[in-house]
Amino acid sequence: MELSTIDLIVIGVFFLLMLLIGVWSYFRNNDAEDYFVAGGKLPWWLSGISHHVSGYSGAVFVAYAGLAYTHGFSLYIWWALGIGLSVVISAKIFPVFWVRLRKRFKIQSPLEFLATRYNLATQQLMAWSGVILKLFDIGAKWAAIAILLNVFTGISLTYGILISGGISLLYITFGGLWAVIITDFAQFIVQIIAGLVMFYVVIEKLGGIESVFTVWDQLPEGNGDPFNEPYTVGFALLFLFINFLSYNGGQWNLATRYISSPSEQEATKAARLSGILYIIWPLILFFPMWAAPVILPDLEDPTQSYGILTMELLPVGLIGLVIASLFANTMSMTSSDINTISAVITRDILPAVNKKFRDGKTSLMTARITTFLFTLGTILVALQFEKFGGVLGLIISWFGALVGPIAVPMLFGLIPWFKSCGPKAAIGSILVGLLAFVITKNVEVGSLALEIGLPVICSTITYILVGFIERDNVPEKVKQMLEDVSHE
Image (spheres, rainbow, N blue to C red):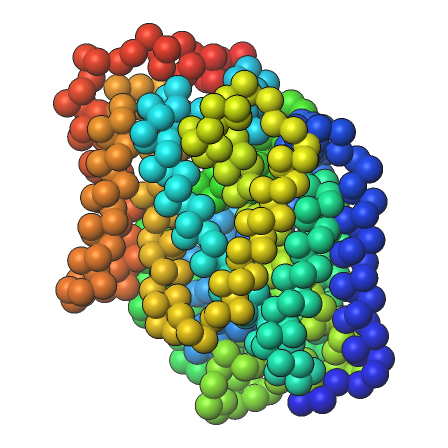
């Protein structure tokens, strides 16, 4: 597949725009609080859009495109609708808690409160494990972008990693969270335009707007059903719980969106906007993927369906726009992760390692150096992508398994009901969740739902049971923190 000069120019302009946003954002940062949490002044509409866009990556247009081709509408139910409902229903709970933690306890990292809520050992366990695993996770995403660039343009993997990772390194290091947020907004606009163009082209190919309703009868059996084996009702419910944890702050970069809001009301509005976008926008975005079996029957590799639709149906120029949107989604997720992980290193890990960082004040220079070095580390991992082989894939899947177990003590720890759940409950829930993951990878558990959900189920049960046993040993500082966070 060869791109025209116009398409290459469109992609080049997109990358240039990312750099210019980074330079502009440079002048918005006066201190580390501006750099990591936008000074707590992030408007609700920007926060909501960024929260929404940060949940996508190139996997949506590759792996999820393959699932849409083979299993149809069920993808919307267990993924998009589940996220949307999780965020909207809890919009007045966790977003509010995160804002109050910043306002009352001066946090800039989503892990900063854990030293008080549990103890330093618990905080450090979660911080170090998350940072190390994210190093490989983000490195793999740079490699994924490079593979996309290679497929569409012929650029080698090495140059693809250096282009996408290098541009992100510059604009994130310069601009901090403001750069991430503004580029998220620009990337959202690109995604909307590209998605609407693809939607229009596909319905025209199928015979008009009525095809939105009639195409389902032409799809393989089960593709129009809300639940399609192995994506059953049980799987959807378990994934709903995982989404509930992940999108309310279990994914640290998403917690940062709420921490950066100026007020509880703004954070709630941001959550509702993101949730509504998840409920509505994927219906348009995924329609071409659902309809692909009609336009491209009997594809040998369903994960290529969206790329083939792009190359076969779109005119010159618009192909470049759609490809730019693929890069936009992945770069949005990686840059969002990098900014938050840098905050964790700067605010949580460095003070525990070196006394000079313990005064609670972080210089802007320290923040930029941390961001630069961590981003550089992810690029170096990506450049060694082929050498990691299956090991890299294993580490990525371990990161996925830890999202639930790490999120349980983070989010449940903010709820007064679980005030008796201390360090033993937190560390125990993480270790038991990890053990459950190892078991699911080595023992046949009987269903995809159990394989995906067992780690977080075991973590939740462990957290609650240990907390029940320890219920008479609640430190006064924990009681006071939960009182401050849960009440106005």
